[in-house]
Image (cartoon, rainbow, N blue to C red; front, top):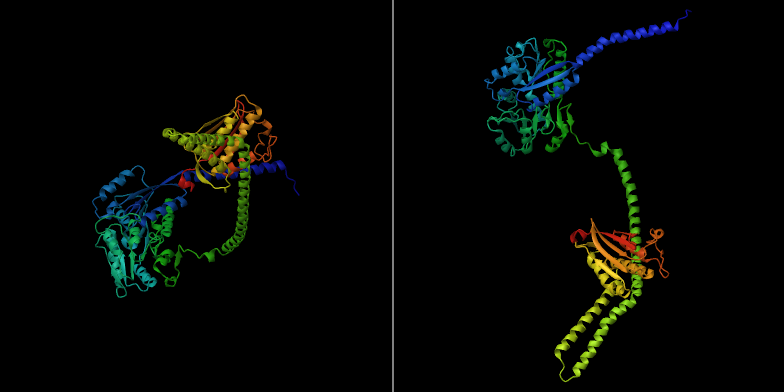
Length: 629
């Protein structure tokens, strides 16, 4: 066994790695240079970029070139406008324009799409891009002079079989009696009109052919609305109609599909996907892929004459399931090997396990919902019972508050009743005289009526506070509700020698609420404020009530000049049974908070900087009567 030197082995290894790196550098530079190189591609359109089906071919060729090319691709598009009318006069200026445009930076390859563009380039090959490789694609082999094809040109040809298209219509719709062939009047379309008539001639004993090529497309649209039954439409081309109007993109086909009462078939899947039933058609994707692959091979250095594939025939028939459903076409009538696209699968067949899972989830949800509904009913009953208890407790609280005001109420009633008694006695004395003064009698009766109304108003206010009613939300004016409470308790404040100040907001304060319960809230807070002032024997004896609007809320502020609330008690003042009064039950402010929250409002307590307590109530403003209802 021979021993090896580790340092020598490491040196050999590093040397091998360096050699591999040096060997790879040229190829990496080559690939980098290739990726930075720009290949210029000129695409020549027969009618324009948006004319179907060639516009779809151009789009697919671009995409495949970008995908297959190792170089950066610069694509320029030009359209042969003269193909719409057959006028050859613009050809010379167009050739001069192209030669001038690409004199300094000629394209690396030219791709002509469709027969008009291919014929134009082939006819002017000696004057246009003479040394530049040319690919003629998506062109029917009958439109090209294959024997005169130069070595620098190649072709991706197709082979029409209109007879097969017509036979497919008769197979798919066995009851077809007539076929309307839609074809335009440009030079290219006129050529194919003759070819279409040749292929249709062999089937004229089986079906009638209608050729509306002598009328405008708009006139044909009107006729297509009332085509006879058992009629089918074969869509060939409509680039230029009989009046010379051009139709780009999907315009003509989409318009016909929108009004026609007959199914439509075609020969190219560039028209397939929305309006066409289907049939044996060329594959845009297949032809475009082949065109792009041939272009890359030529750009890589291969000779165009060595790359001339055989003419492409129709692909396997394919049909639009949506159009089949629209026209009642059975799949049993389709040719063998047909492909049905855009099928809406049956839900059960595709989503069986998902549907079973959904059904199980629905059953579980149903059980949960049933349980939740039961709990919701119980909760509503509990809420109704709680509200009833709140109503009863509030009623007791109102009776208690009014009981505290009994002396003041009695005093307020005694004044008008005493005046009534005095005026009555005076009237009796005057009536005993021989000549009573009628004017004085009228004044006495007016005084009696005024005092009676005053006493009635006191009783009415007292009844409104004491009446026991269910909790009922109505549309009320908050300013008027506060005003009624002030009127009820004004006499009490005067009896206690307390100034009761009240200022209202100029804007309307309309809320949804129970007027009796809200009156109780204001009454409790004002009485508490007066009690605080009386117990502390404050120098300034004043209770202030103000209403205002704050955003979307009505705000009522009740403040006093009493000693305020102890800092430690602020967070407990609304708790049940919390009170600092010797004879208090501690339920007044708790009831107040419950009533305010039942109105979706908020209440807070704080001490004023100048002394005294401040209670602030906020209630949501009602938008209007209809919304409230």
